[in-house]
Length: 301
Ligand SMILES: Cc1ncc(C[n+]2csc(CCOP(=O)(O)OP(=O)(O)O)c2C)c(N)n1
Ligand SMILES: [Mg+2]
Image (cartoon, rainbow, N blue to C red):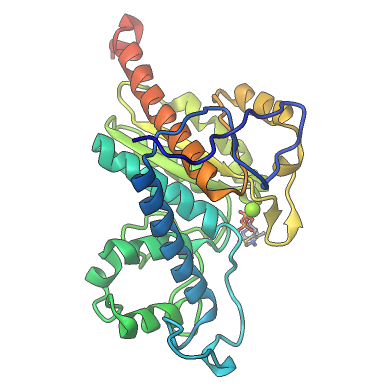
């Protein structure tokens, strides 16, 4: 059954990106049923609650009693910045991992965005499996919140003890290089890499877009970069979020990519737009591989 949520609107090429309003996207469509939409949104909001808890709470993890100042962290280290967007992409990618049984990795690039991956590892049960004291109950959740970016605890990037982490994000700039590194010689792997718009301004990241030139569609897997244009590097404006769609698209076509835009703040239409777009990209990658296999020049070692 198709959902009743509003569909996305087309984007205006000469306009700048805007993070507000009903979704605008290159790929239009409403692939989610109302049940899927409801569950994806609820799962995403649960991950956002966990992200906020990690940032702010020392005690009272489920806010079952009125919050007291001494139950909050005295100093905020880490920031909300990219958490919502990263978790959004992570959850939508998960839908496709399940639907198409993908062999996949998610790499988190933006600054201080570890709550996005930590919250999802906790919701999936992986975190509690590796760290049994961070159990899936109020006591475990309290310990899970308190340890984040706290003396004796864990870092605000996806530091090595994060279950499944192969990319330590503390020094910005290497997410794309690491993502390509994962897929070389792994033809069945698809790696979604979230790149911060602040991170994208570092030298290493800006040059690493060219890693696609070293990729063989038959012997290597695929990289799906998601440039997270939340407009800021902490609280300073970013360049790529402030140029027109046209200019941004030209830049990435020049690097050898096919860019797709998804933007807005209305969560219902954004879920539909992201679901339609990611699915399109995953299926387009499969078509590219099929075409490459049919191409004799590429099939020869
Ligand atoms: C090489 C490097 N330079 C500077 C920093 C300091 N720093 C940490 S987060 C951040 C902003 C990153 O922006 P973005 O990737 O857009 O993440 P967001 O602020 O949107 O969460 C900066 C400059 C760093 N970690 N590494
Ligand atoms: Mg940013």
